[in-house]
Length: 228
Image (cartoon, rainbow, N blue to C red; front, top):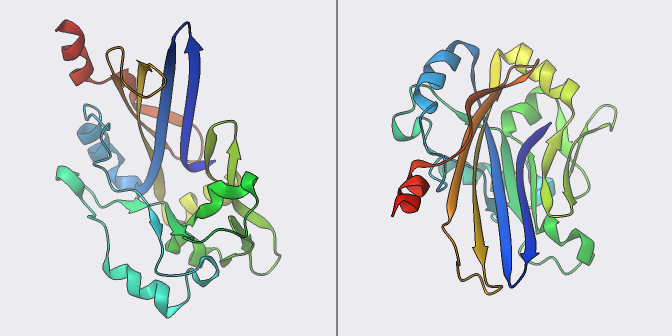
């Protein structure tokens, strides 16, 4: 199961390029809050990056997450738990670590300059640790639980479904996905040559199915641009 991802596609059409990209971010909320969150989120435009999300923190090293003093000092920069009138507390599902000097990485692994792991609560509850860069394992068995991936313009962090399902059930949580993106034509130098379509969507996963709160749609701002 994906916890965070970015996907892009660039196609050449005659003299123009058609580009599509999508950002997927996720949070946990309590099971009891799903109806209130649904009512709040169903008509929101998630384009624009206004919801809290994880970014690469450089104040600690990958293998210092979650135990080191250097990591713990970064916790003073906490995100807003109820952003923009959200009716319930949210918990970002993952944490990023930025390695500013990544000369040791192979070119194919450059995407790991920022590596992501499950959030601190999940790491501690399931007794996990950050192993080789971009990989999270169980301390007792050394099984891989989560890893970063990159394939043909699609990169992010994924976690084993059975592990995630167990965590959701034990903690009585629901995983929320919010998605934003854009679709437009450009001239190869990223000068737009068409209306820019802003994309938005929101879904939830409760251990059984992924269900829509807000199916993917072209945000209202883009409709207004089309009318003009």
